[in-house]
Image (cartoon, rainbow, N blue to C red):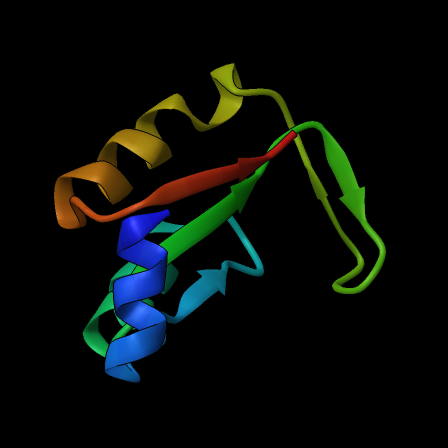
Length: 78
């Protein structure tokens, strides 16, 4: 909570990017353009993008690639 309060008081908001596909190249582009955090999807049909996402097992290598590119917050929409 203190970290959030500090961010708000300093005027620095953070940008979290919801990737439209679980793809390391998209993650790399988001980070390069200033993303502070990334969000990936599992086991869901995403109405807004029209994409469907599979199981954790099907993205194991992709998530390892993303993690190797980026050490910031990485969230999952289950």
